[in-house]
Image (tube, rainbow, N blue to C red; front, side, top):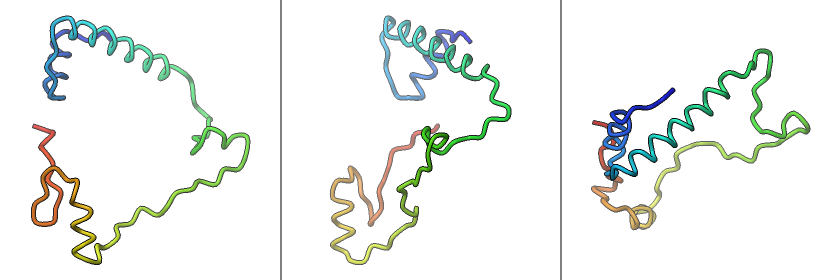
Length: 102
């Protein structure tokens, strides 16, 4: 799949990037090459192959060291202030983030 110059301009705008013409051409070549690699990977027949949670799972039992993904309450105002200390734009105890989708 070959990307057009119009595609690259759109991607750059969506990503909030300003690319010079030579950077646009380079991005177009590299992204087209990456999409070609993805097409090659998608062409591989994986019917009957069990998905693995870890690349070594086919050779040995793997115990994943993951914690439960659960929200924890902020017990004190000091903890909340500590969490928000590095936030670029905290507001009323919340993290404010810029809009990324138009």
